[in-house]
Image 1 (cartoon, helix red, strand yellow):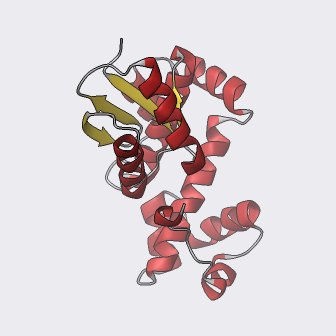
Image 2 (cartoon, one colour; image 1 turned 60 degrees about the vertical axis):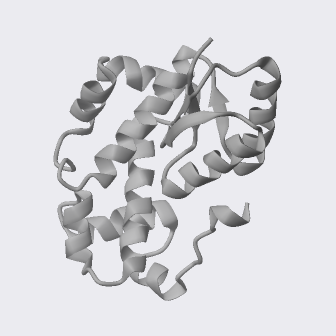
Length: 186
């Protein structure tokens, strides 16, 4: 039995808090929770596993139990790391994924597309746009500064990509200031 559980769809510290709450409600003893992983004090029983699954589902998370799903989830974490770690943002995505997963980019990319129905590149683009949204909402950086942080060649390039994905320009997005959904309310 495993003492490490992989959880899909965790992307931030709020997700960590939500999963900690789910573990507590399910009565499961754990040592630590990080994005995408739970370190248990002991392996879960079948009853605990079902209880955890029932707690995770309404929150939009699920326990990963196949090796292929674990690789896809690790690839997602590598993409998020690539987008959010400003110091490493200049590395090629393929090199970042190979480094973090210890597998060829081609193999990971093939698995990712099969399981997700979209390419790693499309997922990467979506994560970059989400990061841009966060930086725009902070309100203290110019579009060129944000482009540099996220790895776009210019503010104009960022703006084109942003509109392709969201259907609006960054300026329109700022004016709308859509509220971010708190995980505490889920």
